[in-house]
Image (cartoon, rainbow, N blue to C red):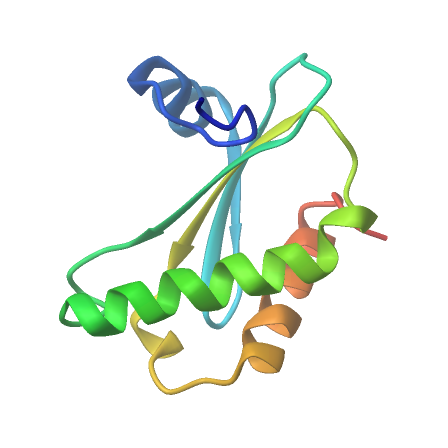
Length: 111
């Protein structure tokens, strides 16, 4: 069974990119859109600019763990796309979490 809290459909991605807003920080760019549902759906992306597959997978793991630590402080009902910047290489989880918190505060999704 598929998890409901993960963005999967192209139409959902298109809605976030076209109708939503974005903000960035040192290591992460966040696209967000109010989805009108009772749950927050997320997606974690790393392009080839980040590096080879090992580096991209590490970047995604860092973002997922950072999000896990802060997700209880976020409001429900948003679609969130987290995109790793190439500056994320070699960073610790605490640095990535701080960067994500800064971006979410700038988007007014976290106080």
